[in-house]
Length: 139
Image (cartoon, rainbow, N blue to C red; front, side, top):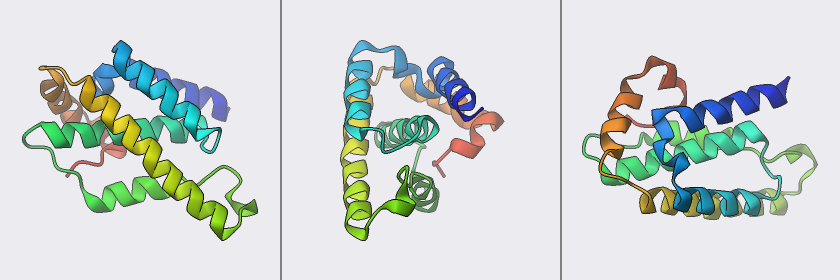
């Protein structure tokens, strides 16, 4: 069941205006490499959420009227605990957290590279969508 839920989240993100750049070849290339770097540390739903956080960070960096909410971002990252965290040492968890930030940076960079003129307008539509509210890390 979790697989199908994760697949549905991924498809909806791909088709949604929230991440319109998902179809961009440059962003797709960067995203695929960043996800490969995760080496299975996150499940499919967590991976989709990390991509969504990165997209929102890129929008906040480029578009007027969008600011990241530090508390929401922190909460979103807390939900990205590694698969098998209960079996990891403190050093392994620390490595995961640092590695996750590197992958996040790559994803944000890919999003910034593919920003189009219409990205801010699409982001405004996403921000107004009540179905997107739960995943939103903007203020």
